[in-house]
Length: 507
Image 1 (cartoon, rainbow, N blue to C red):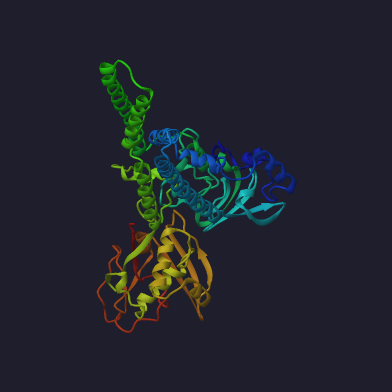
Image 2 (image 1 turned 120 degrees about the vertical axis):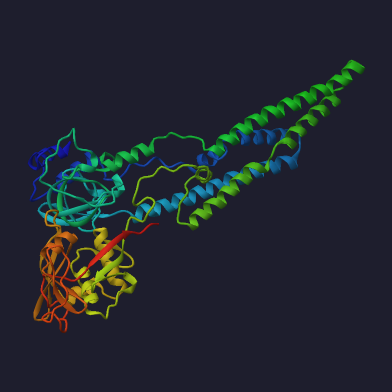
C-alpha cells in the first residue's frame, strides 16, 4: 500500500530518481514488463459469431425448425417467408450493435489524454498509454491524472475524484502525509492521485505506482468485464414463451395427427400410405401456421426504434435488449452530484451596495458591480470558454458569471496582470491576488465570508465608504463619510465590496 510509505521509500522501491525520472532503457524494460497504460479489452466478436448470437432464442429455434420442415415438404413460400423474417431480425440487431461499437470507439479516441512526465532530466508530454510504473508525472490545474500516483510534491493541489468516488467536492492533497492502512479508505488517501480524476487547483508531482488494469479505476473496469450474462426481462419472457409455445404446438399437432389416424383405423383397419402422408402434412401445416413468425422481427424493430430515440438524447445503447431493461426499471439507486446533476456550480445571487439581488439584475455600468465582477475573474486560477472549462467548479462558475457580462479572464489578465498572489489554503480560507491598475496596484480577495469580514474595517455601499462593526454590520452614514465614492478599487484591500452565493445547477 503506497499511501502508507514515506516518499523516499516509494522512490527507492520503484527504482527512480526524483530529479531525473526514468531513462529510455528503463522505460523500454518496464513497457515489456507491465505493458501499455490502458484497460484490457476483450477480443472483438467476429461478424459471423455476432450474427449467430442474434439467433440465440427458443422462438428463433422453432422458426428455423419450421422453415427446415417446410423446405423438406416442398412448401417454398413458407420457407422463404420464415427465413426472411429470421434473417431480417438478426441483421437489424447486428447493424445496431455495430453502430454502437463505432460510437464507443470514437469516444475512446477522444478521451485519450496526454501526460507531462520527467524522463532523463527533461520534461516531455507523452500519450498517457506510454506511462510506466516509476515515471515521474507532473500535474497542474485542468490536467487528467494518467495513472495511480503516490504524490511526492503538492502545492495547493486539489483533485476532482467524482469519477471514482462520487464525491463532487475536489479533494485537497498533501504529499507529505503517511497514512494508516487500516483506517484509510480510498476517498481519504490524500497523498495519492488516481487515474481518470482531474486536477482542478494548484500543482503536484507524483510517481506512477500502478498503470492500466492495476489502477483503482482499472479494477472497476475489470469487474465490469466479467462475462456474467443475464437475460433481460424481455429475453426471459420470450425464451419461456418460445419454450411453452413449442411444447403446446407439438402436443396439439401430435394429438390432431393421432386423432386423424383413429377414424380410418377403426373403420377400415388400415391406413393408405398417401393418406398417412397427407395427415402428416396437415399436422405440420398447423404447426407452421401457429408460429408467430413476425414476433421476433417486430420486437427487434421496436427496440431499434427505442435505440434511435436514445441516440437523439445523446445516450449510446450497446445491446438492443438493454432498451427494454431500462424501461422495466422501477427503482434506480444512484449516488449524488454528477450522476443526476451536471456536477457544476452556477452563480445565482450577489450582494453589493447594501442589497442582495439575482445575478440577472447586476449592472456592469455600476462601479461597485463592475469591480465585483473584475474581482471574481482576476482572483481566479480556473479557465473558462464556451467549449472547455478547467479548474475548481466554484472558480469556473465565477468565470462564467463574468463572461455573461463581457468580462473575460484573458482580456482582464492582459489589462491588469497579476504581480503577486497568496494562494488559497485550508487554514486561511482565502485567496488573494495583486494586480496592476495603471499606476496603482489593487488587491483582490475571495474566500469564506467570515474570514473576509474579520479582515474588513470598511464597506463600500450606496457609493459611500462606511466603517464596519465587529459583528460585520456597518454604521450609518456620517457627514465625514458622505461624498462621492472613490474610483473602483482605489479604496484599499480592507473594504468589503460584496459577496456571491452559489448553488448547484440541477440537470
